Length: 371
Image (cartoon, rainbow, N blue to C red):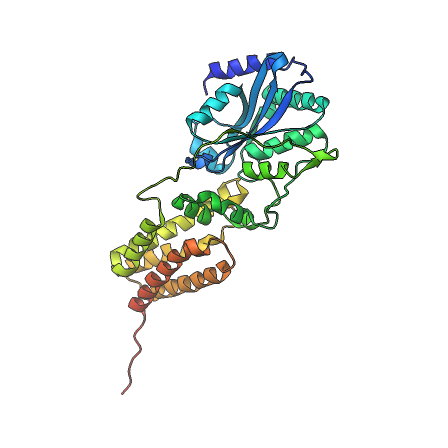
């Protein structure tokens, strides 16, 4: 985002902050449909403030970030990447989602005028204070949770709470969002640790908020009026020749059946390096979702030791570490029996066992036959 755009936003917001909302003012929660980019797979949440008497129709959006931030990838990975609240004209906001062919739904908040004014003032204040910036967290601090927080802050109570799927884990809730995005589903399955296996008691996704708002009562009446569809498009299923389970199964099947030393070597080296990456992320990143990642039993750093001793022709330690890898892979399978992502990682479990068992058999010490 350019400096000019930010300055225009500040000027616009400084003006808006002086506005006293009329009795005809409306404040709504906007829920936006899913996109095909990684950052848009889960939809989006924003707040609309509309007051035609004051010629005001603006959308406040907590999902803004700047791709031009120095060391963007490292900052995002570590979890100290600054996201910020931005505002835009409603018509421009709608045009963007119309261009992206993403649905937009609106739920008008049925709250007293004094709270509408307070919510509008809180949003305006956030634009001009340190509250404008926040450190993004996948579950605890995102565009949806920030909307929940500011509405609850305005109402002086924890009115907006989760009303659906509280008996499901965060991982189970996320899984359907990755339909037709196979490698994104696989990636999040193996990079997320124990936090996403906890029960999903917090609202962290846009459509969770939308569904909960339909069920919440405030001052003896529904907090939202009837859900209104602003934009609606026929769902388009993305098609990719590579981003699907077939390429995944083909690759692992080739590794399993090829029975070539070079291929097994590269496979174990890759798996070990990924394990080191997961360990590093668990300690380096502030994203709690990446901590305590039990998937290192599958993507095991011990495989680097296997590769080292194998390359130095040390059969004794190659055998020992490969056997240890087999035991850890079986332990991982037993731990995963109740997990929703068991099926998607099962081909890797099978490939690990085939490769390691082959290595054990090649380096097994022959038993002398005494005649």
